[in-house]
Picture 1 (tube, rainbow, N blue to C red):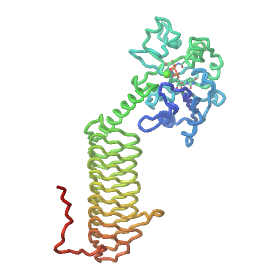
Picture 2: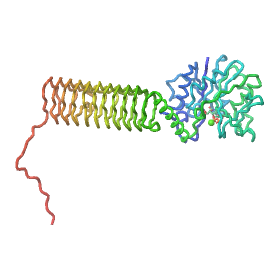
Picture 3: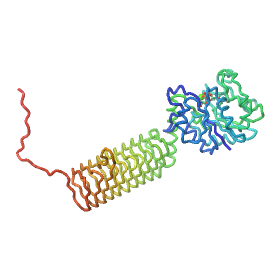
Amino acid sequence: MLEVVILAAGKGTRMRSSLPKVLHKLAGKPFIEHVLDRSRDLNAEKVHLVVGHGAQEMQAALAGQEVNFIVQSPQLGTGHAVQQVMPHLYEGSRVLILYGDVPLIKTETLKALLKKVTPNSMGLLTVNLDKPQGYGRIVRGSNGNIVSIVEQKDASEEQLEIKEVNTGVMAVGAQHLLKWLPQLSKDNAQGEYYLTDIIALAVASDVQVLSSQASSATEVMGVNNRAQQAMLERLYQQEAAQQLMSSGATLADPARIDCRGSLSTGEDCFIDINCVFEGDVTLGNNVSIGPNCYLKDMVVGDNTEVYANCVLEASQIASNCLIGPFARIRPGTQLEDSAKLGNFVETKKAVVGKGSKVNHLSYVGDAIVGDHVNIGAGAITCNYDGANKHKTHIGDGVFIGSNTALVAPLSLGENVTVAAGSTVTRDVESQQLVVARTRQKNIAGWQRPVKPKND
Ligand code: UD1
Ligand code: CA
């Protein structure tokens, strides 16, 4: 069985934040959750999370997750961190050690590393860096085998030249860890218990240390400050954009799209610049999203076009719809086929039926709008009386004149016509015309007031 140990007790001083480092976000999700996702991909039996600084906040933030929190206090090094997990490990397990602040690590890389673990061998993930400063160096013997890791601060001039470094990620049988960890000493430049010292102990006990290479330097990069966070964010987004394009979407500019969640696109979708996608967004075939749109938890049907500057959230849009520019679709909206929402229209908990049009400047909330309804400019559903929300039902074929207030609870039958400027407070039966406004008076010979002359 596989047990994952995630180290996340460090303070993260350089983030200059009151929030524990691993709760800072990449692509809208805390670093630590990216790492937990990888543990899930690998079907880990157990995940042990070593926390220290901000332990309580971490436990609160991850309350819903199946994680065994282990508090390390004080923090005496990476070896000491893993020592805290020892009583929780099952002797027959393979143990994968990850860092909570390395969010881009790939499942495939970890799978390859885990293959190196046998009763007589362990796996160490290394990477070659042009500038290895700060990292532990991989020391190999004359036959090329790994013999130890030496930390930057303990390294000789010669060892500092080594370009192959320790990523910190390793995989090893629990039986070995349980034997080696108690042997660590803090007799080194930093006075810490180094996890990396188990490499020399492995060699001494004839357990071969097999290296596996990270696919790129970026996948094993840790975040220590906001600049690195921003850099990893861009790398993540570049990759997300590449994936969208390889699955057939056209991006006006792959550098100007952000996916903070999962975005799936059908065939021939087009996404213009500066769009942000959050949560789960599904676009059907041939969907077009204009510039500067924000979509969160949305399902959008085939051939629908969303014009510039729209905000769409937690709603469903069917096929052949036209939306925006400047439309706001709030949670619980359902647009049926060929519906149209124009500029400065807001909807919330509303069904808009097939072929219905809400073209400009309207609010439709807590409403069920039938098919082929036309709602004129500036019409609103008055759904709130200050204490309660009420529903508006609008039948098929209704025509609502401009600047109408529909005071809910209200029901308009099929093919009702509402005169412009009406304030409708009582139900209207099918086919009726409702005029609910004061009658126009024209006053002849009217004299406008005249401004006094100052001379
Ligand atoms: C460590 C490695 C180094 C490697 C580098 C890769 C050791 C001794 N050195 O160095 O070989 O090249 O990572 O980034 O292992 N942590 C705890 N408890 C502690 C100390 C650290 O949980 O007492 C956690 C940190 O939160 C962090 C991770 O362990 O997630 C690594 O700690 P860090 O201090 O960054 O290690 P480095 O000195 O960079
Ligand atoms: Ca580090």
